[in-house]
Length: 276
Ligand code: GLN
Image 1 (cartoon, helix red, strand yellow):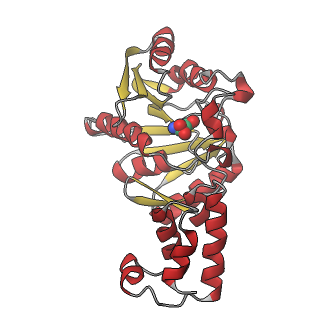
Image 2 (tube, helix red, strand yellow; image 1 turned 180 degrees about the vertical axis):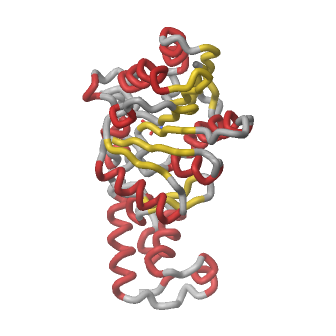
Image 3 (cartoon, protein in one colour; image 1 turned 90 degrees about the vertical axis):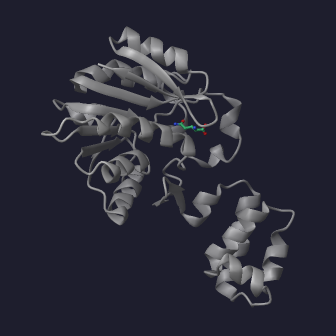
């Protein structure tokens, strides 16, 4: 089979762009190879890989899990079904954290913790973009921590990874910034059945094990944060489109000042912030 025939074999079954990129990943060919030399034969192992990926993609498996990587803020992160696939919305969490780090008084390195780090995108991006910071990252899932450690190593980020639930591995420590992209989809939300979400770790998406209204983990993080924050520290967390008001209420009830919600690029409430 040739490159052109391989692309044609996926037509009507999966998205055209996905087909092209899967063929590029499987063969190592570039986009221009596909355009200029469609008659190039595809060798058997690459063809078998590509056709398997097309089947799995047609069955709804996310592209990132097929090729084992995804981009976030211009860096390539390895992903596996142990971790959530990076979402562009999460860039807002990083931007808001970096804004607070910019004004950092010299003298003492800022300390940051990322709760529920998953593939490590937040912790690693912050460690690389604010090199003076000391960054700790926590996750309950040993599989996720293995992926995150591997990403930190590959990208050259210095992050101290800890296994455990939220604040459990942080006893007696204090941070300037706590960031988190916790599971915030309510149990039974129809979104959990769409867009490849059934392939992603439910532990990272929904709080169904903790009560399931979507706010259980956020509530736990907000309630615990003050004890682990410096007097002028910040808590920043991602949440769902309809959780802004509830998040601000939780922040205010926990004694945070200036509780504020920031919209993502689509104009949707996405990250809430509180100042201790
Ligand atoms: N934003 C993700 C989604 O809607 C959910 C991420 C999360 O639960 N932390 O698919």
